[in-house]
Length: 102
Image (cartoon, rainbow, N blue to C red; front, top):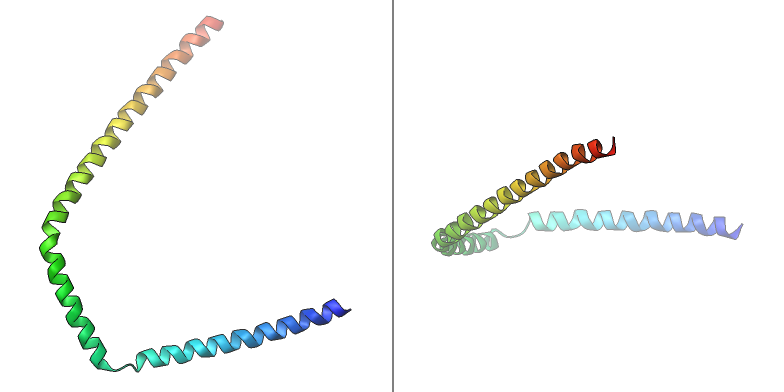
């Protein structure tokens, strides 16, 4: 009987805990929305400066990315060719093996 009592206590405490957490989350969302606009202006200026730096580095990165994609594409096609050859060999061997059994 004591275990049943503990279970009900646990459930009620869990409900209280979840209620507190939900209220805390709602309060934090309200705080974030009412944050001063000055910080947002500073962040946008910093983002613009970072975007300019990235834009300068982008052409080099794009060229490297193109090379990498070409390499992977050639590797994939080579792997497909090898796989097709292996399947053909297995298909050719099976009929020969079956004929030998008969």
